[in-house]
Image (cartoon, rainbow, N blue to C red):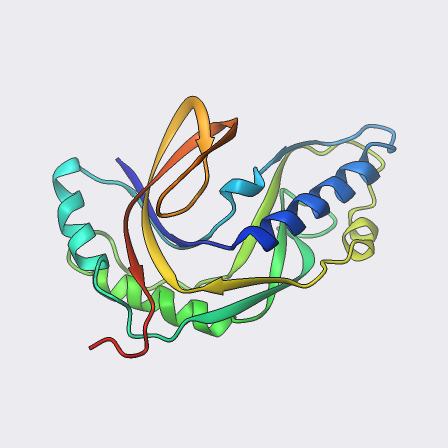
Length: 207
């Protein structure tokens, strides 16, 4: 099965992401040849701390056991501000929200996740570049001034409270997409089906 470890971003950030996506959509609709963009459903937004990939079913119990204990880190907040693009604003292939506070704490959390996974999967340390992917550009279109658009749209006070880490299973499915939470609830849409397998709280008092 296909697995990854992530943290939730919260409903306030989802709502702000939906507003930003609509603002971008409104601006590109008027250009000569609008680009084709696959937008991420706000309900599925998350911060991936570690992408594990395909693993045998037999390995899952061990992964759950390693990730289940509380993390000895205090809960923290992540503040999202500004729009960016990979690989560049002039030739974007992905659009994202950036982090202005809480990035170091996300990095520390990702490092602890990696430490726990050593010996079970490929757990080589990797730098974490925290961001929220909003959409992926499938066709570039023509007449789009991406630098101007990205600078013109303000991200308004988007803040996530991070208090737990979850191991998720991802399945490609034609069933309705599920909210990316430890106890998912159904929402409209098609695409990957996410199931929380185990969730561990952050607590500075963990041993």
